[in-house]
Length: 211
Figure 1 (cartoon, rainbow, N blue to C red):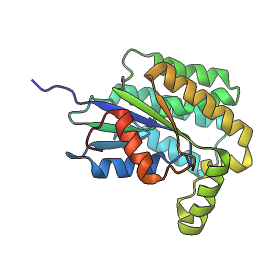
Figure 2 (spheres, helix red, strand yellow):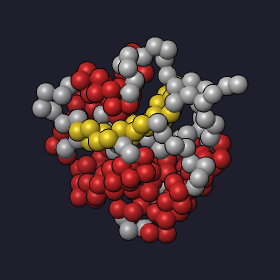
Figure 3 (cartoon, rainbow, N blue to C red):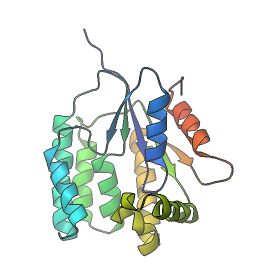
Figure 4 (spheres, rainbow, N blue to C red):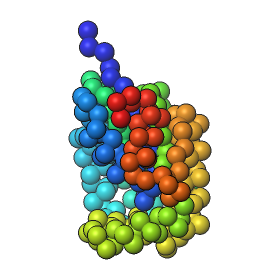
């Protein structure tokens, strides 16, 4: 009989360093884990459509929220437990909940909360949330502007445009991840903690021994 493999979560808002950490962590583990981003299922057409609408920046926020709500519900239905170790980088439901809760859009936030409360919502064997100070994120944003401007997404600019709202959203995300998934919080802000140290610590916190 096939047994399900372990499922790990790495969360965090933009410019916290989670994508770099996940990519480097996956590359150094043998056998190599699967890596999923945002959608729990790789074939969530509703999520792809909602993300395209977000990037086009032509849809009212509430309508876009309902598109993501439908995508998050479908995500749970399509999810299949992994047959090999998988690292999940962010989730639609948790990030969207924090996004709309911080903005006071309670009806949408409650919708995402119900999805997270669904007994079918995946449980993670371990979870980590990466954070960083606004100052550190601004440094990373400037570095990205210089080295890879095509990789800058509209969400990255929230640290400049709406810093207080951004911090409120992060506070909600951290609290929910700790309560729901027992997440450990890792601040990747400077102070001698370079990318290599972040990768090692994330691996240790998730219990991936050969990281």
